[in-house]
Image (cartoon, rainbow, N blue to C red; front, side, top):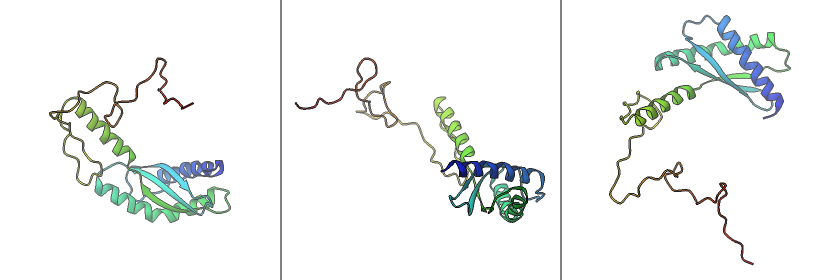
Length: 167
């Protein structure tokens, strides 16, 4: 991504957010935040990532309202911005905040020694369960990686040992 497209992305994110907050009065659109804008290098298309607070039905209604409002928003951007071409806007739902919250809740439950509650209907994240120790499992060590395997030995000072080269 070039510096130019980054500047355009940020400008579009700010302007679209302002238009949504002050000028769009569609009752279907709930509490919506523009989280990111990604334009193509030729600036013909832009994905507008939005976060919507509410249940699944509220999100669906808000997304439908936003899709209907994108033509108006594109025209408003044409009036406000001095750009040769205003990109065609494509709205997408950004679920990263909800997923992050769910992951933190599951981790907190697991740390407390509790099973996480059943995931909400339609959730796309797998819900982890605590692993029961099986006979023959190696005892847990404090120097394990994310996959549960032990790391290579380290020399004093933190350097890893390398195989010696033949002479």
